[in-house]
Image 1 (cartoon, rainbow, N blue to C red):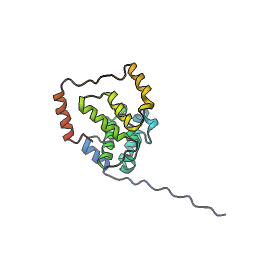
Image 2: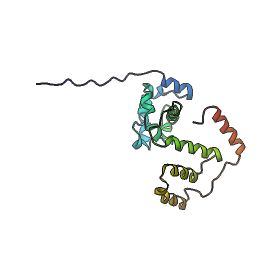
Image 3: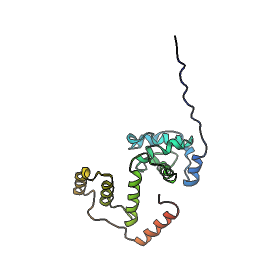
Image 4: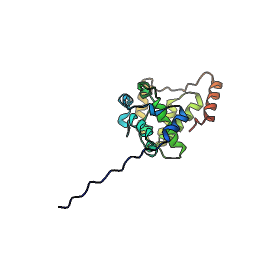
Length: 192
């Protein structure tokens, strides 16, 4: 009988550095995560993720930067902060995930979710103009660019009729103070 030996799986080699860089840049110590998985249990977006938040934390601890930066999870996260609130060690997991998105853009990599970088840019442009989002303009601009405007027009109308999207934009009352804050954030590297 000719039996083949089972193929050995590659061993995951931990790499140091990523967790330390995140701590230095953002102040979050991911080594405090002991994998209780409360973050993943509470996350409303795990259905759209390739790795739940607890696995993201473990991958950071192991230094698996390439897999993390290619992950859909970091783009599926809606920064609702449920994971951060549930963390018994007070790790701001949403901030950690956001730092991974920043790394993708800093390294010039393509986000794993199509058009997310364009939406991010349109969102920031929208906030820069008024100090808050105007969903009507944001969604119209994005959907026209992606060719989805006609298919979603009925949904937009229903949202407008239910008062979910306003007809006219609102702005912050103290525009000067907002521009100063926005300018400081840009100088610190917040505009990506």
